[in-house]
Image 1 (cartoon, rainbow, N blue to C red):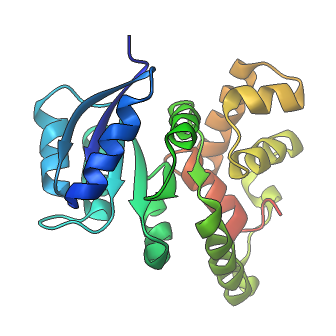
Image 2 (image 1 turned 60 degrees about the vertical axis):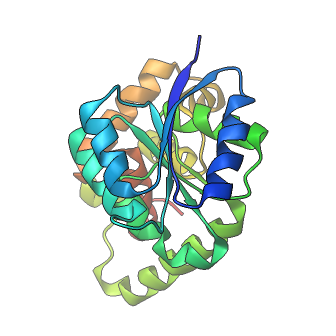
Amino acid sequence: MAKYNVLIAEDHPLTRQTLEYQIKKLKNVGLLSTVENGKDAVNFVNTQQPPDIILMDIDMPVMDGIEATQEIKKLKKNIKIIMLTSYTEREKVLDSFNYGANAYCVKNIKSEELSGIFDIVADGGIWVDKQIAGYIFDVLKKMEEAQKQQKLKAEDFNISDREKEVLKLVSDGLSNDEIAEKLFISRNTVKNHMASIIEKLSVKDRTQAAIFAIKNKIIE
């Protein structure tokens, strides 16, 4: 029985076929369907059996992946979205995360890596391909420098030391189970810390919490 049901949204036939092949090799993943543009992805989620995870290309006709992500998260916020991109599209990474994307990987991802990413995002984690991660932190660093005078401190949000530790590990891409093991606490305690953090920072999910914390130097 499939652990995750997946939808592929990709307009390029060869890339789509490659992704289909990779997913069919994974024993714990079921491929629900494939679509060729963001609008069809939104319609699929809205009218048929919703997937657990969507592999979403960024540049597609009719509706691109970023806009589709925004619409899908409005309909069903629990669906996890893994953005697919080429390295040259890295500038769109932050826009994707801002609208609720859970992971960002390049299109030549290997099936065994993809399986691990499914596990991370399904557990509420975030994942960014190492080819793109450096760019993200460069952008965030520039944003921090430009807004230095407006920076807020952890104390302004009443973020505890333990919550800062949890936030740092979330930003490193660790799952709830991994955080629990590293901090010697239970998985439920990690979830409670995350719920508290999300409320205090007035963000929608753990992805936005991690990005907000980095931007505002709540974590280093």
